[in-house]
Image (cartoon, rainbow, N blue to C red; front, side):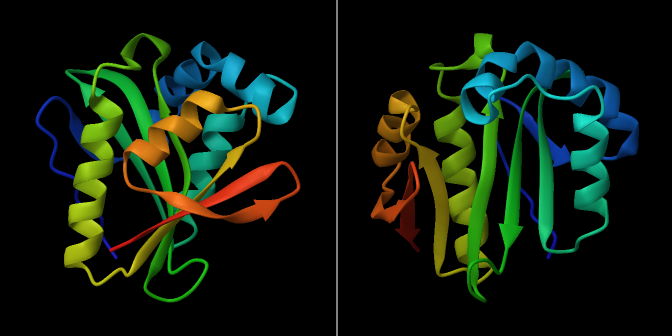
Length: 159
């Protein structure tokens, strides 16, 4: 499935191998997120690994969010997971300077619209216990608590 997101304040397009350097730079600028989530900064090959994994799996969408030529965020999504006609947001990461300015909300609105039109029935994601801001963000986007797994609250939004 090709995922198209139409945004008002940014451009969304699939990331490709040529984007590894700019994605790696974003990951490094967002190292605080990865230290909180994984206990360490992203590896020097993290971007290339993400892009390679996405290009090798038709169920993975890796969408870059651009303002002009600058990558200001990305969305990683798994389609037909955990069930057929569902989707799972693996990560929505925005440039630290872009947070709390409405881009995240705009991306979620566009994603919900696109997936609904494609017949997706629900969107899932997980939020680690220490991510209080993320929890509030996803709840404000209409996601509801769907249970817990070892330090992670699962959320779902039915479409």
